Length: 592
Image 1 (tube, rainbow, N blue to C red):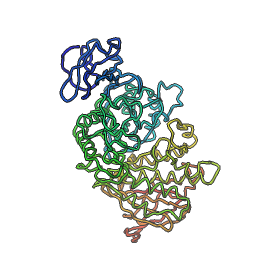
Image 2 (cartoon, rainbow, N blue to C red):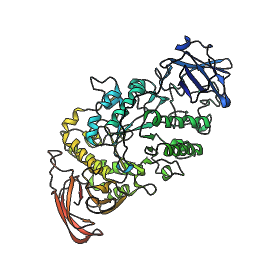
Image 3 (cartoon, helix red, strand yellow):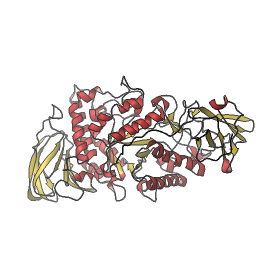
Image 4 (cartoon, rainbow, N blue to C red):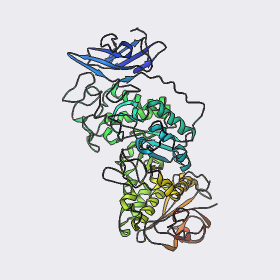
């Protein structure tokens, strides 16, 4: 051991040897054992620092060595994985010394503005495991990046990658939050995925879990031998505040060292992996003990402090909360400070309207409220979707499966049309739109971490994939004709609850190529002529018609390519136009 100084936590690769630093305030002594000392428990002792930290430099250690901390507390000897380990052999194995020297190349990734983002959520383990030549699951995702680029999305959101128990999981049971799951390919391969995505103009958002750790394979549990009330020790609350739906493993946000641990992890993803955003899981259980009561002021504090620091150091990234309690303070700078939050005001009423069996029971007023909801003064402070990992599992399923997935039946036609209607609503509504993997080719199996996507459906439903490509291109204003879909403006022009039709206008600054009108028919009713009010007269071009036979042979395609609006007040608008409207169809119009 040498007495040189170094900065940082965990194992830090130095010019000569490796520096180790760990927090273990209740320890009587701490040693580091590993490949570099033939796993001796006593050869390399760490030196006590202030505030319960221990550190030292092992000159014989090097990158690639496996190691653990040996913590003595009274008569108890504990062998612990490093809480800051950047790699582990597995969740019950050893820490591995790493060095952050990845070759990122010369390519520059230019992230889009938040109002231009379209997210595609995926689970690495089930996204493309059928690839025969993939070296690992990360490589199998890389093989589909060209497909995702062609689809038109701007970001992939990846379900949690922190090392978890076993080789199969959704990822929301992190055992080692700095280490990338080895069964997926580990940290170097995740960096390769990020680099490959950036080369295609695709950003990467990563799910992180700070509302609880584990609960299994958790070396943080009673890490240095101390605990109270049968609690988890220094990293966790040791009283009633520790309880969560996933175990009594809520981090103790009241301890500065624990807040710093979470803060270091959040910044780590930007500094070492160059990700473009984080989506925090279940933030309602960070700010409340029970999700909606027994508030935790320190939970608010840890979110706010991290988000403020990220804003200063990485202003281009997107910080998203999955809170789902319709709490405006989540995206308020003086609250939790997130850029956006998953919006329960959208997903629940929209899914209810899409899944309701009888047309007469659908509420267009509920859809109007879902479209109009927002947090603060920015409509892009919410993420809108009809499918996510939570909404297609745990007793719930894909929209197609919920309505009718048997392709021989009329129910499948309804399922196909209404799932598309939901996508059209998502991609034209105010907010940041998100799709769930396979949604664009009508994947009909509920999500399970052992069930892979059926990629053969891409060819089978090629027209539907093309429909999603067209919708995403309009959302991103690729043709320069629908800029309004990226704007703050929305006006609900038309709510026909009797016939189940709704129409609305989106705009940024207004005018030709900007103002965009969306009409959605939520009924199994064909309208050869349907009249709706619009904000301007003259010719309106049909930019999208979900009922086009170009997308599916069963679609009628009644709508003309253009219609003329005449001066006549209608639905509070100064002009009106009449067009044909297919059953369960979406039509998008704008002017040249």
